[in-house]
Amino acid sequence: MSTTEPFHDPHIALNRIYTKRGDKGQTSLVGGQRVSKDSTRIDAYGTVDELNSFIGMAIVSIGSDARLEPLRKILNRIQHELFNLGSLLATLPADVHPKQPRVTDAEVTRLEQELDEMNEPLPSLRSFVLPGGTRLNTELHACRTICRRAERITVALSNSEEVPAEAIQYLNRLSDALFVWSRWANHVLGIEETLWQPNQAASGTAS
Image (cartoon, rainbow, N blue to C red; front, side, top):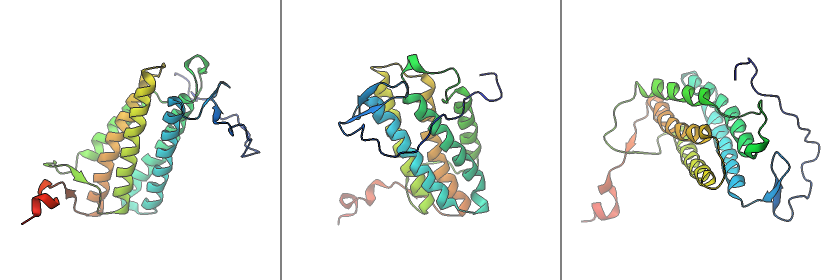
């Protein structure tokens, strides 16, 4: 996209919230096609929507803490990008408009840059990290796991239907970024990480 405003603005009017058109287990794609609500495509963008809700929870947990302001700005942008991704996944490839919201190489590259920047000050890991320490950390870990699920479903969709490569790339980078951001949040707040210790299991500590 070479224009300053690459995507068109939404053209919707949500005057009625319920229409009863989904009472028989079907819903409409952007192009008007009626599909089953348990289809892989619906599952894909529904899970992206779920992820967006959890991102919102993380933003609320950040609140007005100035130490976390860089992350809040990133997550605010991510919410818009996830809606763009949902718009793309809710549209059959033949119906995608040139200016329809989507994720592109620019979003993937931006995530990689932000991931690297926030990973730089973090201590090297010698074990896996367990969620904990702060509410924000655990919410970001929840976001990470939902993002991985969205990625898996989108990959499954790509095995039967055409899916833009950027959609899978974006979800893959975002899940990695959410892991780094969860660590970064605890680091900035001065909270010690909890590392996985296999022998803390009942079988490892039994006398």
